[in-house]
Image (cartoon, rainbow, N blue to C red; front, side):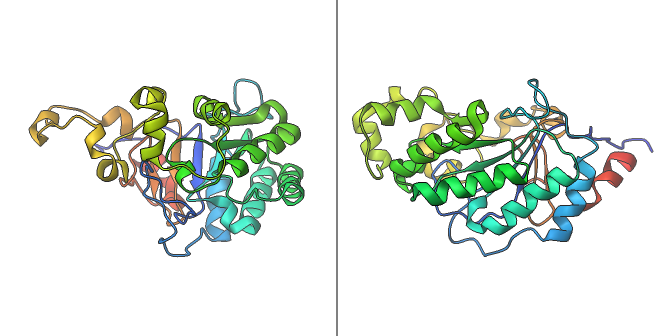
Length: 271
C-alpha cells in the first residue's frame, strides 16, 4: 500500500519492566520515580515479546556472551531490581529463547550488603545474565549512596568481569577521587566540579530533563524545528525500547509509540 512505512527489525532492544524507580533523577529520559504505580510487565507479555525479539537481536561484537551498551538485550526501568523475582524470570526467559548479549541496567540501590549483593548477581548470572550496566552520574547520587554504587561495581567486576559496564565511568572516577560518602546534591556537585565536570554527561532533551534542567539547554521557538525530519530516528533499528504497557519506542523517542509491541511482528510485516 502506498505511503506505508515498514520499520526495520530491531537488532538491539531494552525492556522496561516498569517505570517505578527508587530515584527521581533530574535527567531521566522516561521520568521514572517512586511515584509511578506498581505496574510491572506481565509474564505472558514478557514471553510474547521475547519470543519475537529472539529472531532479531544480534550479539555484541565480542560474541553472544559479550555485552555492549547498544548491543543485545537489556532489562531496565525504572529500576528492575525493585522486582527482583521478575528480573530473574525475565533473564531465564531470555536464556530459554536463546537471546544473546543480555544485561541488566541498575542504579545499585539494592547493593547495601556485600553477601546478599553477591548472591543476587550470582543467581542472575546462573540464570543466563551476561553482564551488568551500572549507572553513575551526578543526578543519581542525589538518591543512591555512592557506597552502594561502588560495592555494585566491585561485585560485578568479580562476577561478570569485563562485562561490567559503568555508565559513565568518568563520573565514577570523579566520585572515587574525592572519596564521596553517602549522597550529594546536584548543587553541591557543581560547587565541587563546576560545569566543566559535566563535559561527559549525555543530556538528551526528553522526559524530566526538559523541565528540571531547562536552563541547561538552548531555547528555540517551535518554528525552528518545522523543517526537521525525524524519520531516521523513528525508524532506527538499534536500541529500541519496549515498556511494561506494550509501547514500542524507537531510538530516543520516548513518549512516541509506533505500535503495541505484542504485535510487533505484524507491524514489521504489514507496515
